[in-house]
Image (cartoon, rainbow, N blue to C red; front, side):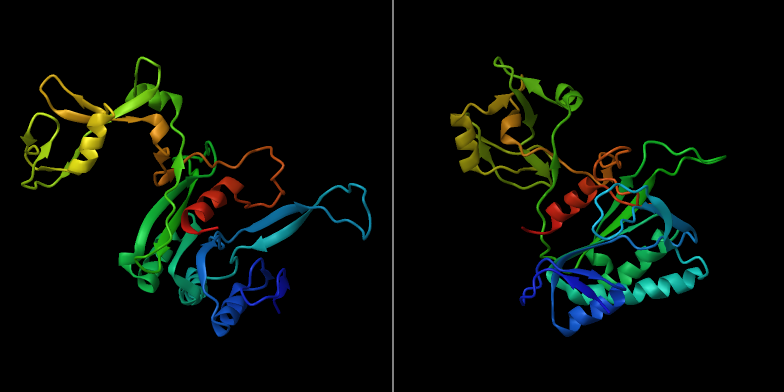
Length: 297
């Protein structure tokens, strides 16, 4: 049975299901519900027991009781890897069914089975719909005997179709990055010089104020003439001593540094009000990034 909390209207907003997701997925398919984003943090087939400290309060009691440690879940302890893969494969097929055509799925695993599940995801969603392998650093360091420290998990990111929701996530530039890759003008404002060409030769010209100019060998102009005319009026074209043009782009006009596929800025805090004591809890910042990037408000 699925226990449901929240709205009861037809759009299924704000619902929480506490049940085996196999049951819930089949129910969603029957009701033709479509979902834009799925993030799953399934068991990793570690064959270990995970305990969490849980506070148990008597009814109507407001006193603070000490937390007790209880078994949270057992990660396929008695099952073979093949059994694990059978279970997750069945669910992944159903998850693809409930995803909308603009939907995405993020599958969070570690070294135990991620390489097996990647092959399954290629079959279920198609190799052409693989978007990223994301490396999430989950701790600052890990001391493993006679081996390199294993301090990361892997998140596999797939889209359902080409027209996925994508709100490009960015981070603020660090002071070290600004000082290394940016310049400052007389007012102390940061800017950088962008090359106005891209890879691949095209036989076309642009006028940067001194007549038509062809792009360098193997390159093409990536900026339109109208854009160049506007930048010239705003004094945002800078020429080198050889006369090569660059575009001056100010930090204030940038949304930030694009997030890369190695996430080392979402390490779970050791002390925080968001910590619940759950053994494999993921930080809010990690989920916030995924939700913001691959779904709309």
